[in-house]
Image 1 (spheres, rainbow, N blue to C red):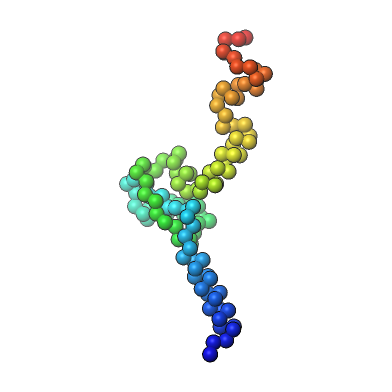
Image 2: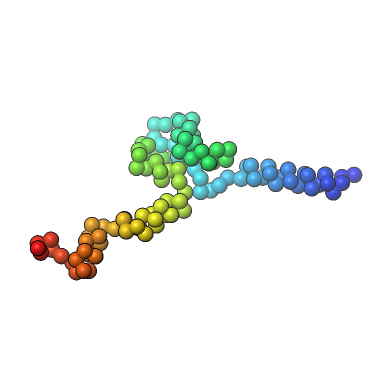
Amino acid sequence: MVTAAQLARLDAKLDSLAAAIEVDERLRVAVFRDETREFALARHRELRPDHAGRLVPWEYRSEKRCHMGEPFAVHSDAEIRAVIERIEAKGRGKTVGERMLPRTGGKPTSGLDH
């Protein structure tokens, strides 16, 4: 006969096992062209130590790793969007023309006005 305490322990153990094998769909280890999975995993763990111990699926990319593409490979869409929103809130992220308009009183200028 199984006691209620044993069932509770078994239930807790099953929950912890299910959480351990659960894969976060937002997270991926990007394997860029000409890289091994081992190198990609080591680089991902270096950039995102908070992902340690998680099961993360592999994503193969046809381009080579570069300093511009790497942040997009290790951060989720929500994290990237938050960074873009912070940049836009500070007034950066606007085009040169958009940044010039406030200085001219909102009127476009040809650049020849003195």
